[in-house]
Image 1 (spheres, helix red, strand yellow):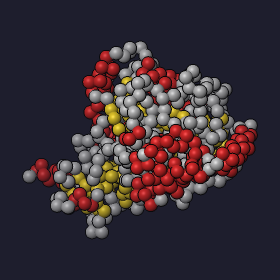
Image 2 (tube, helix red, strand yellow):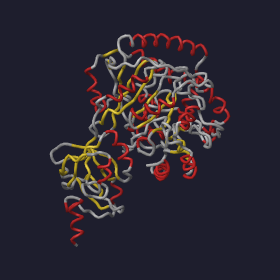
Image 3 (cartoon, helix red, strand yellow):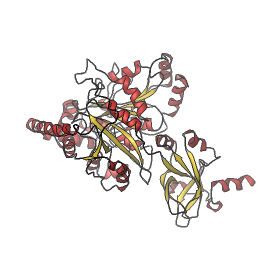
Image 4 (cartoon, one colour):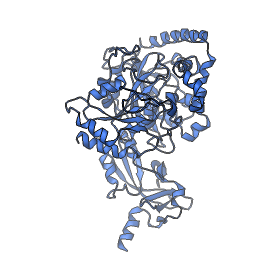
Amino acid sequence: MDAHEIVDEVAARLSEREGVWISTFTRAELHERADAIDPALPLAGMPFAVKDNIDVAGLPTTAGCPDFAYRPQRHATVVQRLVDAGAIVVGKTNLDQFATGLTGARSPYGSPESVFGGGLISGGSSSGSAVAVASGVVPFALGTDTAGSGRVPAALNGITGVKPTRGLLSTRGVVPACRSLDCVSIFAPDPGTAERVMRVARGLDSGDPWSRDGRGPLIGEPRIAVPESLDFFGDAGQEKSFASWRSHPTVGIGPLLEAGDLLYRGPWVAERLAVLGEFLEKSPGSVLPVTRQVLENGYGYSAVDAFRARHRLQELKAAADRMWDDIDVLVLPTIGTTYTYAEIAEDPIGRNLNLGRYTQFANLLDMAAVTVPNGFTEDGRPASITLFGPAFSDDTLIRLARSLPLDDGMTIAVAGLHLSGEPRNGELVARGATLLGATRTAPCYRLYHLPSGAPGLVRSPDGASIEVELWRLPAAQVGGFLAGIGAPLGLGRVALDDGTEVTGFLCEGYAVAGAPDITAGGGWRNYRMRGEKR
């Protein structure tokens, strides 16, 4: 596929999902860029998305706040390096306003749902960039990461997220959150693609006072450890998913967690006011209430508080650095649990802090981190791990991520157009799915012929046993496949006639009102065959 064909495919998919993009180039502009690409360049023709707190010449930078918007005259350094390597900027993606949040729920431009559906948050603040990659629209995207914004969305969308060592990717042309901690991050479907992008994007920038470069030793067989204890916030599914890592030696992570608490429960929140304070004072109504609440907390800290916290952080960093004398890589769950948007709305501050429990210490303690999928919970939610190492261990972490024997995918029950021989079965086959076999549901479902032409499976107390097929889909392909399944269908747990449960497609009850009930045939195929005979 040449660059122009890629452009057409991407342009056709930009409106597939709500809340992902804030602004995009036109199809004609993208083709113009494709015309100018040298096919010998390392990223020739690769489309990518850019979080909308990173400057792209020709598009406004909003940072998730329309009244803050400005039009940059030049690309951010990291964007320019990617463009110079042949990549094509498609557009700017949604984010939690001013990159303040880990949920994806704090934007006036909408809240994109995780590609796994079910009302699951996309994670933030780099919400749009993660969903754009996980849904297969672009092969990589840029985000930012101060407290976990390049890792939490990766976890919730089943993709790779690289948070480089601070300064390894230039932050010139990035709207600061906490300037001393901010990183540009990379989202990709897999560590190999992320490494390819990282190779081009990294490097010193003389115009960025925070820029630095370096490479730690490449460790072929790193010493791996996991925490002595973890809090999964009552989520037994996530705890079980991490259990396979428990065979590794353990270390205490108390200093890491205490350092992380300083970010939002200490004076570092005041650093956000160094950039945004004037705008907040002049235009308080332009800032979302939850974002304003977080930012205004910064006014409660004095210079003395800041120095005391800085001194304590130095003590905690010394303790964390001693850990690297005995291990090379620390493995943690990226998040202890997942949330739906409804659950976040119940406690937007507290649950945001829960999401950052195992992410927000990394930049304060000058660590590199790589997030990768770790399979799925039994109820079909994504699980994830993050590999941590000291500053400039990026190459070791990415190489380790590429070598991990991670969970091989998700078993999905299909009951209609994705059955073997049906019109949409090719979507499974093209993504490398394998047929495990045919079976039947427990006798507690009804099947309806929806106005769209597809069947809808609904749980019902007076249901019947319905024919389904079980397909095993590779983990890296799950997000992209599910992104093509729209409402009223969504993921849920499907009970089978042998007493087990698997993840499958269920239909929202509202959508079957007035739709023909086709349960009597026992399945979609029988219904269709009866129709053909008539």
